[in-house]
Amino acid sequence: MTTLPASAGRDVSFAGVLNSEWIKLRSLRSPFWSYSTVFLIVVAFALLMSMAFSLAVSEGAGAEVASELGLPSLEAGALGGLVSTMATQLAQLIVAALAVLMISGEYSTGMMRSTLVAVPARVPVLLAKGAVLAAATFAVGAAASFAAFFATAPVLAGAGLDSSITDPEVLRMLFGSALYLVGVALLSLALGAMLRSAAGGIAASVGVLMLLPAILSMIPVEAIQGVLPFLPSAAGQRIFDATQAGILSPWQGLGVMALWVIAALIGATILLKKRDA
Image 1 (cartoon, rainbow, N blue to C red):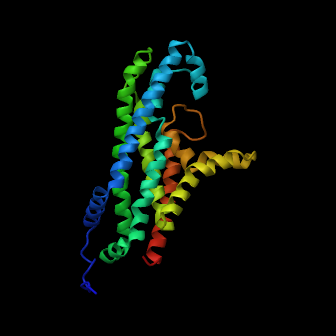
Image 2 (tube, rainbow, N blue to C red; image 1 turned 90 degrees about the vertical axis):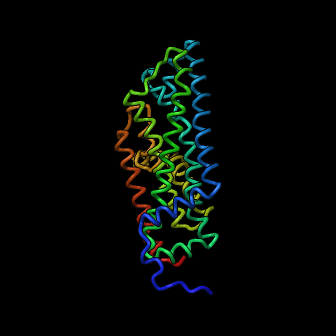
Image 3 (cartoon, helix red, strand yellow; image 1 turned 180 degrees about the horizontal axis):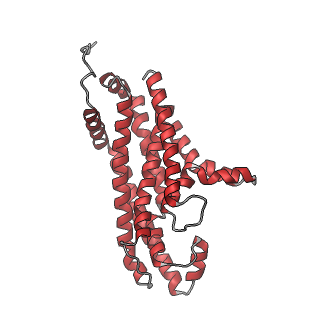
């Protein structure tokens, strides 16, 4: 048995923990393939939808399309941001699974024991994981949404729907999609830390983000319906919503999701400090 020196973990700075988590992320295959899939899904889906919208406009069905999307009219700016972010709800499943695996995988392999021996304070480990995950997710999410916008702009322009990247609403939707995915990643990371199981963490993430809103929406009780806009996914998705209708504004919705994320991270931190690895 190897005995660690008494000073082990005492001189570890947060920058060192951050670098360690960054090395872990880069050295695994799953983040590369997961983020690559997110990028491809967002861009490919945007291209398909832009072609469908262009075809609808050319056939004179633009008003019907706008009505189905909940838009007052098929405005170029709103549509340009909308098609670029339509796959965000699908991409969130991949991001959620990756976030859970980032921490549950360490528990299943026993690596978490070594990590917590090196960083006895424990909290910096979770913070560093969250920071690295958030940065990588935002970078990929923003790159995907902007790539989708530039890929679909010529298609929409061909149907007379010119959308400008300098439009504040377009920028809000493109960056908002990336910010929402960051929220999903951090919430899922916290759930993975609390449950310490890949299957349990992914199930909990999907349940909170998708199943819970779907189930509650089917219950015809006014009080329950009033809660729906404040659930993490419903509130967070307001930041890249093309419409302005709703109880929460886009930034208020993102703020509500941030509160859910903070609460989950606090719970994960408490359990991480109390339980053995």
